[in-house]
Structure formats: C-alpha cells, structure tokens
Image (cartoon, rainbow, N blue to C red; front, top):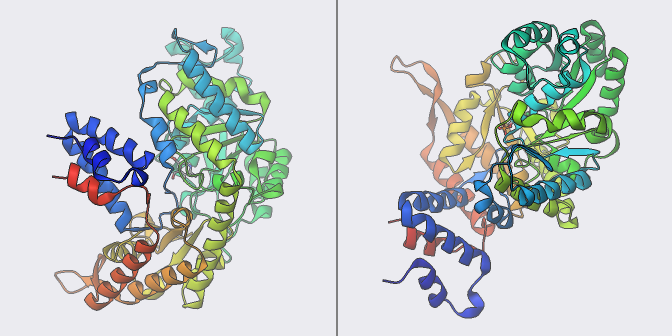
Length: 500
Ligand code: PLP
C-alpha cells in the first residue's frame, strides 16, 4: 500500500507540488505511524480554523516556516543556563539558536538586551518581577548571606526573604479594566509575591487617567509600576508613564504581549513605543507578533544579568525548538511586508470599530487605536457569554470580556473583545471589515436571552433566530472561502489520508 507522501507526490503534476504541503504530509505521516488519532486532530484543527472567522484578539496564524522550525530534534536538548553559561555539556548549537533569536529580537525592537527563553507570557512576568527584585532591593539578608543572586538560599533564608518581599509593592491596571491576571490579580502568584495595588481607567471615558495614576503612584510608592494590558483598546503614552515612575521612584515595567506586533511593525513609535521608555518589557510572540507560543523579555542593559537568571531561578529548562521558531518569526517581523501587515491590523481595527459604531453599537472608549475593541452588548439585551455563544454558532470565534466596572463580573460579562490580527493575516481589508460588522450586528440583533425552566431569562442561554443563524453562517463561509488559511495546504487530501 502506498504512503500518504507517495500518494501526494505521484498524484500531482510536478509543477503543482509545493514544499509546504510536502513537508506537512511527510510530517503527518511520521506522526500517524504512532498516533493516527493525533495526526487526525491536527488535520481536523486545520478544518476547524478554516471554517471559523477568528476574531480572538490574542490569537493569530503563525507562518508555516515558523511551524517547521518547531518540529525537530532541538527539543531533545537540555540547556539550563544561558548561551555560553550552561549547566549541561554539548550546548553549542542551542547557544547558536538562542543567540540568533535574541539578536533578532534586539534588532526588531531596538532593545539593549533580549532573553528569549520564557515558555509563556505569565512566566516571563514572574521572571521580570524576580529580576527587578534581584536588581533593586537592597536586602540586608542577602548581604548578610553574601549571595550575589537568589538561587542558593537555605529554607530559613527564603523564609526571611519572603517576609521582606511581601513589603514590596506592585501597581498595575485592575484585572476588570483590562489588566492581566499576572499584574497583581488576587488569585495569581503576583499578588502573593507583592503587596499589590491596582489603578483603573476613568469611569466616564474608559481611558487611562495619567494624572490620577500619578497621584496614586505618589501615595503608594510602588517598587514596580506596570503598564501594558490584555483588553485596553487605546495607545498608551509610555513617556508619561516614565515620568510617573521617575517621580515616584518606581521601576517601569511594560507587558506588551498584546500589541508587540504593532511595536515591531513601527505602528507604535515614540511615546507609544514601550521599549524606548521602560526598564523591562515582557511580551508574547504569538499574538499580534504572529510567531510561535512562548514569551521573551527585553530590558535595559542594567537588568540583563538578573533577567538571564530566569532559568533555573524561575523557569524549567529552555525549549530550544521553540527558540528556533521564535528566531524565524522575528526574522519575518523585520521585513517591510510585516510592517505593512501591522499597519493593516490597526487600520482594519479602526475600520471595523467605525462600522460597528455606524450600525449603532456601543464601543468602550468609543473606538480603538490598536488591534482590538470592546463591544458593549448590553444594548442588545445580552451578556457577553450569550453574545460569544451566538456568534460561535454562526462560525465566529471571539471571547467575552468584562468592561471596566462590569456589573456582570468576569464569568458572564457585558462585553465582547474583538481583534483583527488573524483576519488581517488572511488578507482581509476594509470591505471585509464592513462585512464582519454586519455579521456581528445581525447575529446579536437576532439573539434573545434563553429562558430557564421557570421561564426567566438565563444569563448563559440563547435563543438565536434560525433564519438569522443560517444567513450569518452563509456570510461567514462566503467570507472565509475568499480568504483561505494556509492556501498551500490541500485540506481535502489531508482529510482523505489522515482522518478516517
Ligand atoms: N500578558 C498579557 C497582557 C496577556 O494578555 C497574556 C495572555 O493573554 C499574558 C501576559 C499571558 O500569556 P501566556 O498565555 O503566554 O502565559
């Protein structure tokens, strides 16, 4: 019996064979020899992704080049430490990979130092917190112990240190106003490491109120002032944050996980570019930046040694195959094509926001400057959860999101978060944004809250008009048929070979 690869290579005219598809088939063939159900899931995921309009603001589609860089023997190597300072032998090739990724990241963002090991954005933030503590806190305990870093403390010394660390203050944006869990949310380790304080947005405008933040920072005097968020639709003035940090004596840390692609693509420059102003910047490559999952840290040279101690202080061994994939993504982001992409992400978001407003929707802060917007769905009589479910039933994927001061809380919410990174990767432009706004509007208008057994409106249930569902689904599919994800990949062939 012939293999999937043989079937592909013999079933196509030579000029119709493409390298990406060949690599994909070969890769899945290897996987299927051991785990056919795993190969089937990969193919089914491609089908799912192709069939849904992805408006999740934190997701994207990384290139097939980047994906290829992840699937290789680099995964086998342990390399705790950092280049040329490893706790394992034989790390020359990992050193080379990590150094290329770090140099590419430095060049991409104009940073003094880059650390590309963190496995996730949440981990990168913890590494950054420890680096700041390590660098900034004069702990008599440490001097007493004559330690230069925190790696080798005894249990007793740790207990002493913990007591001291609890007195350090972190000040970030409130989770419910768009901050991330790791920015001091009470159920996250960040709120246990620090005495944590939150600022919020202006109740009326929904915007950051820099004067109010300054006033609060002067009262709190945090060790770390943290900016950069998960659900804030506006540009951030980092020059102003720098002034506030300097005035209150804080280290300025920025988590640009969401909008890193707009920084890399030179959409956010000057006062809006955090790398110019912050001491430490953390980010993920898998959102607007369009790379693989993971994270990286950029910092001023002063913090380089402390940041490099991320592994083994906080992180497990680095993932060399993922650092290889990061290197490829950073190289891709240094092209003019990527800069055009980043500009389009922003212009698409602005166009979509305007279209939604023209259709009568209410947007948090009245619009967007970046890649995302928050739509208040209460005017449709829905919770965010109902809106998310109704749209998903029509083939649109996005997530519900709290609005600042949301009376519905984080489970039900009053809003949905809508982002343009993924649809822009597919090549969609302003006309398609108008189509998307129409789809969102028709689905939300065609949805009523479902009823409980007792006949009362239920926050989680929906009653979606079947005619609207049919019409919206057709519109979504028509849109997706014109903008195919990974067009090099022949889904019918992959399904035939791998999904039994
Ligand atoms: N920082 C911000 C601002 C985020 O929005 C997120 C995730 O959505 C993270 C950090 C965490 O990233 P990860 O999921 O890779 O841990």
